[in-house]
Amino acid sequence: MATTINQLVSVVVLLGLLIALKQEFTVAQIGVCYGRMGNNLPSPTEVVALCNQNNIQRMRIYDPHQPTLRALSCSNIELILGVPNTDLQSLASSQDNASTWVQNNVINYPTVRFRYISVGNEVSPLNSNTSQYVGFVLPALRNIYNAISAAGLDTLIKVSTAIETGVLGNSFPPEDGVFRDDVREYLNGIITFLVNIRAPLLVNIYPYFAYIGNKPNIDLQYALLASDGIVVRGGIRYQNLFYAILDAMYAALEKSSGSSLEIVVSESGWPSAGGDAASVDNARTYNTNLIQRVRGGTPKRPGRAIETYIFAMFDENQRDGNEIERHFGIFTQPKYPISFN
Image 1: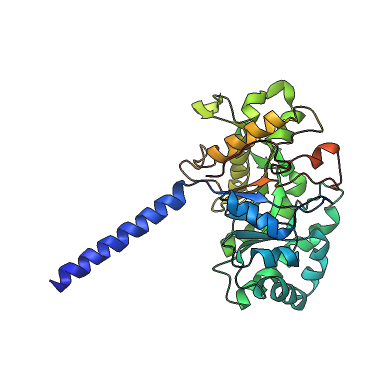
Image 2: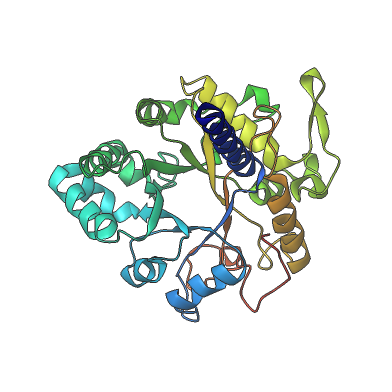
């Protein structure tokens, strides 16, 4: 009888684990990016409350803002914590500096659910605004990882960096995706490191900018994730541009010894004003469709939910760059109804 009861308990536990895994596998993996480059934004405490009201369980922030980290304590919201590009040189030059950074911004917040640390954002030899940081990304990655490991947190917190899709030399058809020659050496070191520590690569993916850059050849509805898609070589149907860009990145990784890497989409969104095809209706369409589309996988990664972070929670009226950069917010006003359930 005891053996039978033990077997029954084992079956119940196994079924519970399978159900939990199935839920994790199928439920949309959506979070939000919380930028603070504005003078009219709610407080971090109000932001966390807003996330809870909307069933938002993941967040990305771009620097270790202490009031935000305090607001996130005990919130159960999983976090991507950013290392600002301006900190990379200091963290790359000294293990002690990196260990102090981790102590101050991670270990001192034991009730914050850190998921990833993004060591730099969109650092690239191609970008005049970030190229000066290229030589610091990999050593900073190593030092932050060493500090996380020394604290015994490396199984809980993954260390990575966020790149943008301009590093692709070719992206269509997606199977032909490959990195540009002038960024390959830089990326290869990062890819090898991430493979070794079994961490994902963070990628910022914006179908909006791909569409604006190639309007004669890209249908707006395809970019808005609202069409039946297109058929590419081999009879493969791509339902939307987001899937196509993501698979082009996977193809490029495969050609650079990164076939084992998973991609986390660390930014994606659509502007509501400030430029061509930027409207409230298009932003609502894109972001609503995105929440649905990430529940499934791409042709290269079928059936696998795509962890994705919508940029951004709020319009940021002090953000540098073109006017369009200041109009990606979804909760400013709010502009339109959107459900994260």
